[in-house]
Image 1: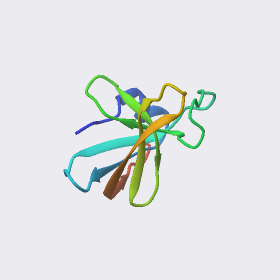
Image 2: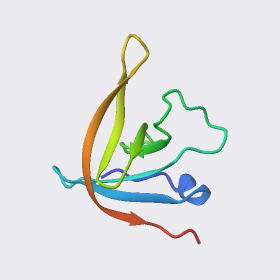
Image 3: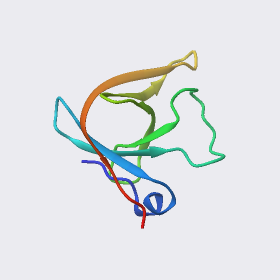
Length: 92
């Protein structure tokens, strides 16, 4: 399981879902306004570790395309996750 840090939850709407294959839950959110995007098209943060670790991603209805590495050419190396069970959290 990977959760967004509390500070991120206060600033923007965070969502969550499960990886279909493993059942692992993770949260994701849009990048903050003004934050640079080194990989155009991957404007989401997928939280993937216990210490506020995250990766660039593109999340659609049943898939998440997660940038896991940068190739020597500078192009993103992308991993496709099949996902299910989207959860949207309401901001208080």
